[in-house]
Length: 423
Image (cartoon, rainbow, N blue to C red):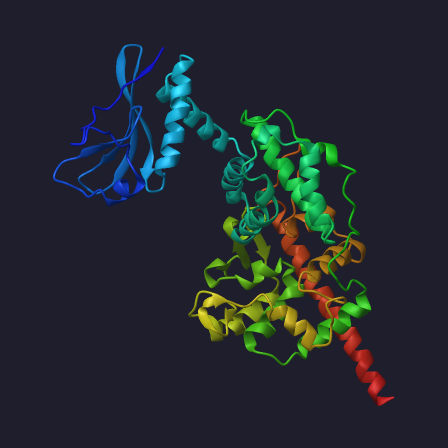
């Protein structure tokens, strides 16, 4: 059984010993050497020559003299230090070594922190972010920090139950953000499954919430897919009277049908003039896989004209605020509003749906060619992902035929308009 060792006290002239007081501890100044101010029952304040003050308890355990560190003064007050000393004393009375108990508790807290929902979520995010674009990775982390961490941050991931997760998601659902609630459930599920794989959890509670959250109405980004309406849109694009970079970006949108962010960040060094293709590096793609966009003759013509204006810079469509920045994400979207299309009629992303629909239904190209050109996840009959050069000759022919088809639609509509004006 452990025993407390009383610090030898200096007895004042009147023969009455006084325990340490808070004013005395506060007024203690640094000296040339470290010194101690004694209290009672082994507790003392160690005053370092640097001026820092530390609470210590001296005791004996298993025949050995030991010291227990309690904390720093004044962060830990005299009263709090005495309470901790008394707790340690009770541990000694039951045969426990306070220092060893403290070490075990510290290790347990460290392990608990390492297995918390937030710690594992951040670890999962760090492992996954190389597969995402920077903007997508930032969006996921921000969603975790604002929606899930406030409630689940310090919870041991293996202790989180389905009702507990549902309670968090229901709060989001109650605001009307049904899609956000569903996305967070999916994200949480990936984090729980990562914890299972790495041995920190036994099951995924999100799997029990399949029917627990209201299903949002599926919204499709607005897109024009009827040939005659596409023709009218193309004529409106030709008549757009904006800045050269925005006009060029808008004109290329239906021809290339890439994601708006990929188009905005298009760089001159990515254009291979000999092979007439745009080679997008993996770090710019949503799926973190490099992608090739064959350039039709119409696209080459637009790029050649734009090269005269911005060819000396980094970006093909630089921002009006500076050549070192790409075109704003509002560029093409605002241009569509300027030529008369509302957000419910057509979006910058809608050019992808337009191409996918018409290439399939009107030009009858193979769906896997179309999906591959859209940079969607496409697998061959053996389940292997196609690489960036798969079906490249066929896709190159498809892209040229698509551009020619758009010209045909536009010219036919233009002729109708002209004839109508003169009749």
